[in-house]
Length: 555
Image (cartoon, rainbow, N blue to C red; front, side, top):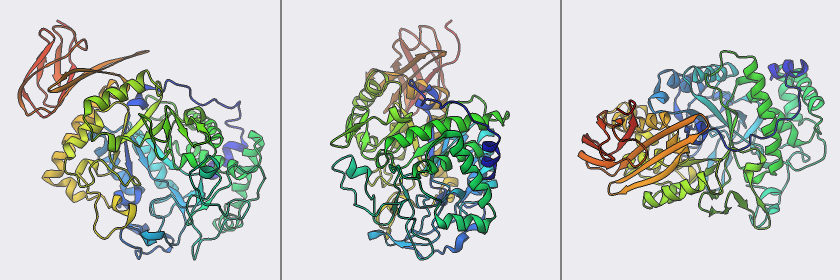
């Protein structure tokens, strides 16, 4: 990354280490709606890169590259699609250059690294998704639209050895043993899967650059620049040249060069947590550097955001969670103490099938006063590798939207949630069923437009009201289920009232202490206005949801 060379040699960013952002996390991130997409499966904007790196469409069902790219994502950003949904940030799968070949991935069959999780070169953009210029254009387009950009990052492993991709040196990757998940060592200092090359991130032994990267960079004409950048990084930081710190340098360069606003960290629990703390310090420095050089950056800057995937972890002691810590069996680790602002709530997809009144109350208690107070969480109803989505057949896409977008915490919309993209694909095997191509013809259909409209009304309301995700929940009525969310934190004072499970037509709902007597309110779902009388708000043409917000001062 040539720009990183110049900046490091110039001494930019040379200062004392920055501590990981302490709680409480900015309410923006605690309430954010994050749109997660598999770049290869979202939109094809440049057919010219469909067979980059010699990749063919000869994998098993949904296991080859399908053509989605950064150009297609940029076109969607510029169309205003994400703004209409009320999205705050876009999360892309890893954009790192992946291995070029394919492998037989267990029962999944012949597979390519279309998903981005099989790194070959941490310093390059994968040619199937585009170029460095394409990435810069995408980030700039997102920032012009008020959208943050989160990219998926990996430090646990490199991609598999294939017929055309080499094995990494033995001092970089471990040969085993396979993880047994019975202890900290059996989860971290082990091989996650036989198809991947597990990085020795805990190693204290200095290593040389892998020969395949030296050869690759020489062919590309950037070997001297990359070596100079590494020399400058290690001189500035004093870090040893171990695999861990090469990865920290390479990952933080994506922020320094492109202005990335946040990281979603893959396989966080399989890496010694100290690495993540080091990465966070460098990430904060890198974003500060980038912003100093880009006065036209996104308005309303927020701190760098780092959210982790700790598999089998969530609120309410889901899986191996014990409060805000992950229990390895012989050791507990709170990843929030190692640079993370938030962790993905992997329990929400299943827990949201239970009655929402109990779920929302329990979540709010944990997020506002319990073990997660001041931290973020990221709820989802579907994801790329969770085989237990809330509604795989999409039997209730309207209810899915309500359960997710009105829950306490931040919300992860998985691409196609908003058009009812089925997660059951015939002839696919394993997690490929979760990763079908976004069907833009469905988005343009009458049914698709109606679903997008529903998701958008909820999303834009949530965007205007940080109290939805970051405020304290208070139930006002069980029939219909009505609740208030109130946030009074520093300069942020926000309140909203929501009613669910309505059948339409006229309804009268309580507003509790959220709105004063005589306050003029607007139902953001139907557009109808009403005035608070005796603590109640009466509506004549309510839809299936009521979203109340203040419009004027009390009369």
